[in-house]
Length: 52
Image (cartoon, rainbow, N blue to C red; front, side):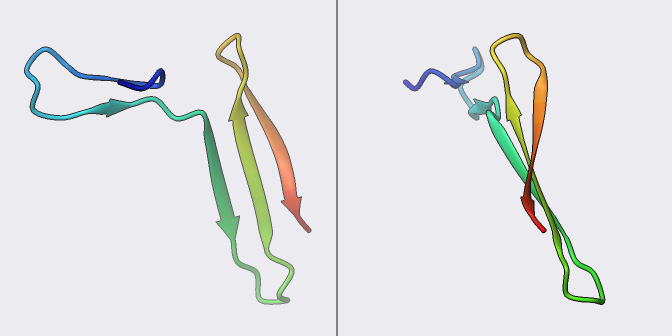
C-alpha cells in the first residue's frame, strides 16, 4: 500500500488523496494560464504559477 491511498473497508475501490493538482486555462491570445496547487504539511494548498 502507498502512503497517500487507503483501501476502504468494503474493498471495492481505492480512495486517493491528491498531493498536487494542475489546471490549464486556454486563452485566445495563446498566453495560456498554467497553475499548480501543492498540498502542504498542514493541509493548506500552495499555488505555483507554471505559465505565463
